[in-house]
Length: 459
Image (tube, rainbow, N blue to C red):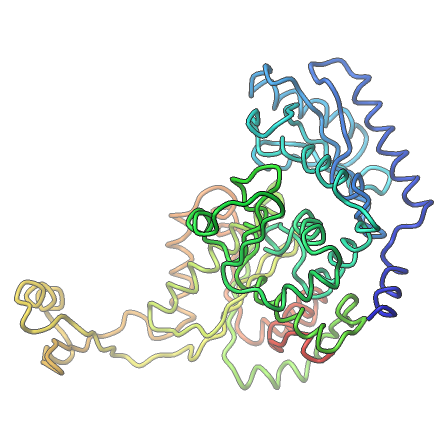
């Protein structure tokens, strides 16, 4: 174990030269912000670089611009955007959103975010969700000790390697702040991983204080609850999905049983050959819906909308009788989006059975029979309940999906409405194989999807 962790640290700890360059450039941007006129009172580098827990090559600079609490919200947002745009003058940027808009982009190879926040000393004075970030910095830098920054780096890389890392909607994983708190709670990477092997559904982790567990569990229904030490009313693991929580526990158990560098640096998936893909597709029914990417919508927001519409399509398809065994979404920023459906059968029998209420229930029996005046068969009584057969509206999935898309197009708003209006195509096996051959990113995604295996089981 020690040899493995030492080897991993050699790859993930930033070099002194890299750290010095990051801090110089961050200070240059901060000085530029403070040299601007405006109502802001200070600017600060927050996040993993400020705390010394970032990974080599992850040069994201999160710079917060702080305003007095007396500044009105509209002016606060306007000033934050103005300062951000001035910093990015001559560089590529986009407007992003957390609780309020901010500016992010790339400058000199660094991913930079310029985020407005209110200057507070305690969460009781908080006026926007991001106001806590400076308090997070203060808390962790004052509590970390004995090289725990590198222990946090190990845990972050482990989460990356096992595909659990990132609170954005494309990942639904662990935020970096949670990884840091877990190291603070358990003392080291090794202890945190061993502790996770014993986690249960609804696990509650308290860094400090002694709240009643039953009250915490009543307040939060997430699979994992990590109370924010600077704000006990907040679960900092709220973005973590049930699947990602389970995957992390399973990965920790596998690692403790048989440690390997592969947990941190998994071997990249090689897409299947075209012939192997075609052979696999003969054994299952795969259909995909291809959507255009709406202009001007940032990736994180689009991921949320895509996941939601994917769930809706899957549910409505199953409700129609086409049983969806599994579904998955894929997105290529600015270009296209795909919803993949694995179906039991793309064709159904002409008739379907409808099960009604108990025959003894007169009111509901009358309503059920009246609602289906011309059944193909029945109504008859089976096991004390009314049963009848009716003709299906759709027996072919390729006829149902275009009509479903038209229906959803009328219901959706904003970005997804644009996506449903833009180059929507229903892809059968031939079209899927064609896209697979043309787009390496999609081929990698589809290979992982079809294999359906957690990598760490082979380490």
